[in-house]
Image 1 (cartoon, rainbow, N blue to C red):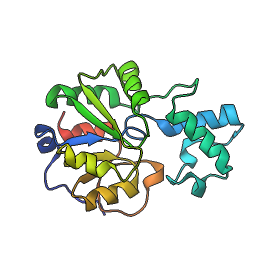
Image 2 (image 1 turned 90 degrees about the horizontal axis):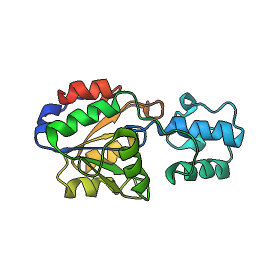
Image 3 (image 1 turned 180 degrees about the vertical axis):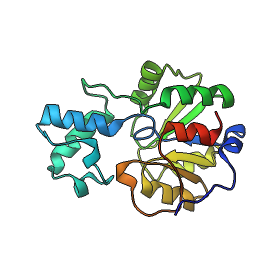
Length: 200
């Protein structure tokens, strides 16, 4: 069951009360993960659609050490592949920034510098129109959002959505293969849905 938010997205936009996750919402990180696995680790049948659980050990028949090596490469930006934005993210984020002012991205990565560089280089969003906070932990996102007065967060990790809801922050679940389990959150199928939700 998917609930309707008490406020619509336009209200959150007007109040500047929203923020975004990065991996799996803005950036197509799982495709990068799969590309590195196939081309550099010989995992020839690794494709994003096989990633049906955020806990990769539950859905991939890959040694844990190999998974850790690939993840480390991804989060440290140590790769020769392209980390692509998800379709529509660039244009819609720019429209949101034009209407609301600087945007906030909160990531569970331990270091936000690679995210800042990627936003600038790939989406042409400098520090004047976006801010990145790296928490190093999924569970630390709620406190950051509360401290910044954010009441809505776009997230792809279902477990984080439950945690945010308990903290009084309204999650919007960005649909991905790894979050297809029962929940009661508002969800969007991509950036075109988010554009409609926020009215941009």
